Length: 483
Image 1 (cartoon, one colour):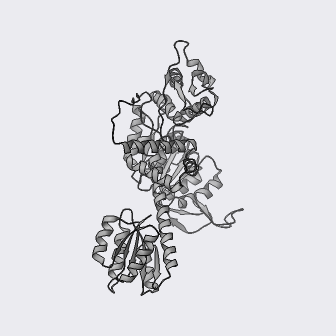
Image 2: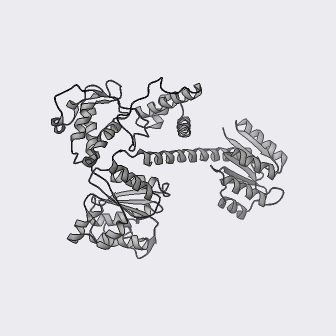
Image 3: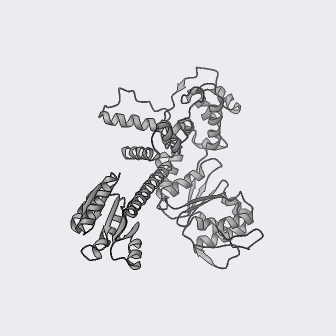
């Protein structure tokens, strides 16, 4: 149930609405004066505020309460009521952030319905904030995997430039994680709540790519039966990620250059340019300098894109990160027959570290996926690895087991800085705290187990746990507060 602040200078109205709200189980703070209401508003931060627009026959106080309620963090949802309703007052209140507007006298059922809608809206906003927080957490910097000097230099560069609007060119071989870096840049910038729109420029022929990027008008070409917004317009306010930019034709290069220079796009078949506010991130797996020498890539566009280059090292250049990555890919994977988390032997990790990995991190992930599918129990050994790797193994020594640390579903989603060989804590080495903290940890651990088993499906996890989806979100929000 919600905290509700009620302000009206008619005492009978306050009494009637207070009784209604308390019957519904809400915690009500009723007031008939402005000053006392403001103090409680700032102290309690209620989910819902119901206020008369004309307190003491003046309009000022009602609007002030509305503005102060919307300025809270998180903002309160506000329902405005008044006996002096006009279209102008309604529009003014809605412009200033009111959720709804009721004219006196109103039916009790109308008020009850309005309150239910306002609180449902509050729940949806809270869930949206939580999901956005989880999305940002998924791509936060301390979840980028690697301990090697080369990758740590990359992480430092990402952190320095994420919250700028500079165009960035991400360079690296296929499979090194260029799109993941682009997402990290976006979700850690001031644009994080605006769209992130990726497109592979090598996946479409020139005419389709032009339509996808810039849009088209109805009748612009055969098959253009409707107007279509391009991806630059879809990404307005956010970020567009142009993967494999080197494959773009010179005609499209010139159009892209104009977008970067003029901050506007023109749809195919249209004479009117549309302004866009988009940050451009581009990536390529081949040196653009080579394309410059061949005359297939515009020099002026190259310098526009290459404002800040980020070079991703290949996996063979950071072999010390292979065990960390391998352990990361095994986190929360459960063997279908044993029901246990997967482990891996030290010898298998050594074999993985010896390989050059021409397909980089993507190839390593596929190798781990294959090993998990083929191993007979929950322990991955050299024999479970792809045949191309087995010649790296020596015949000496036993296959010593390396424990795979478990992690929450969120931690397994991005990349994690850490050591695969970090020693686990024993139960007696950890400090003992209040029992309620232990019970909370056990509960959150059980919730995360359910999420792991359902692949992150919160509806199925809630059903398994015997709770509502709203309760599950509240438990996960508590985990954010604890962490």
